[in-house]
Image 1: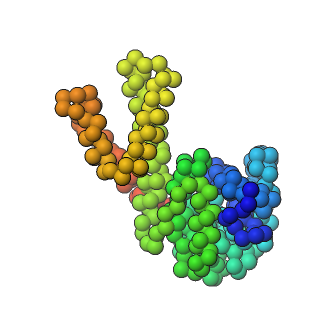
Image 2: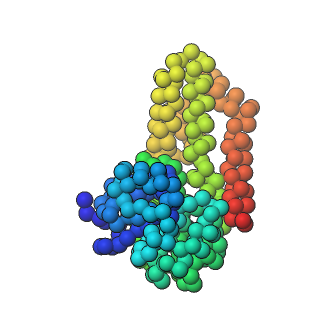
Image 3: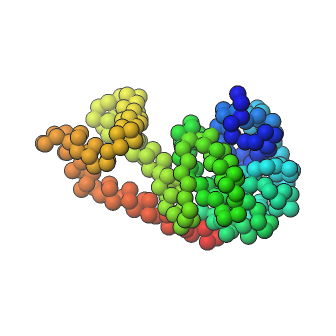
Length: 276
């Protein structure tokens, strides 16, 4: 398959080989990027071996070796170790290497403080549905990024799904709280729906399938119809019927407020992480 993402001969290096890095690597290879042009720095030997066996990429124990000569570096380590890792590799980066960080809560200013001056830089918030190519990532390019580099960053992240671009970094904490953490809220809802089905006498496998397909189909209808969620909710809700009886329980239980509060709490935590 022809590589439609990166310029010919480009090398992409990953700092960290965890689940999100793996999802992006898988998407890039699926889009035609040669795995021999993908490098991964990963300290755990077993994980290095797994990455090589699964994707055929080049793996390194040392961060500096992985980034040397790379055209793009994706920072995919835990937020708490980003500064130390960037300090370690800053001397090995070429001046034109694009650095893309997917570390939650780590600001552009923090990233820039641990990189050489004028290093092209972008910050991205992906989410875990990217593991199956159904994610959404939000991209913020630093002022030093050229148009071509911003387009390159977008194309790389599109390997995991849709990409939105923003200009205000102040939005990133809310984005992290909603789309970054949001899948966990959805999984909790799916589990609760299935439990409700079991409590109503359904076999667990059937309850699981019904919960999953109900969420999946409802999300697709919401996206494709373009209708407000409240309008679609009302279409399911007939006077004195089963749905309004269930909705009454949800409203009395404060489910709407709890979900809003969860997003706000996650947003606050993201702000706290950004100050460390």
